[in-house]
Image (tube, rainbow, N blue to C red; front, top):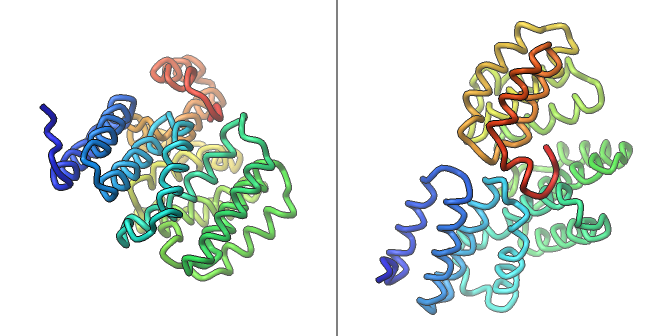
Length: 284
């Protein structure tokens, strides 16, 4: 007999699943809980279970499975927005950022579809009363991915100029992204300067300084600060190792090993993550 008998027990089960390690087992449990929610026959239960499924998929190596549940959640919003409480309405719009970033990592998604999705995000944010900051950040990701440097620079400037609102990433994550773009443009000193508040512990979140430590490795090597890079590698690898979703950061650590004469260690790290070779999406 199912332990999910009402909305309260469903919420407890989702909270419990949220504490499990990232990966296929947690994702499978989220799918089971969605089926349980459907059996309850209550719209809020299905909405919350879809939101939970999207969250655990996003923080795993199975991000490509997010499209179907998000399309379903968006359809429910369009049909009956009154079924969404304030938290779920906010979460729905927040996931737009995950989807926009996720699409550029999926080779089977055409660029035209990504651009259409970006326009849809901007339209829906405007309707909900949100500003342009998150939208321009998403546009930066798309433009940088396809090599449109001029558009990316415009989006970067517009992103920083827009006011922060409830759709903006946390300050630590925003500094990570700002430094990433500076490093992409060869401005390594500026990247490391931007990352300093995160690296020194002044700003942090669930995924920082994990990502910033990894992102800083190659810029520090290029600047000749090898010992500092090595310290970031040792500190950062311990943080990302238990987290399946940190694939790009993990890849930075592998690359660091390969570039510093420790190819054997790079191969050991690759061998620890066979799922990264079998799932779909961007290899990083």
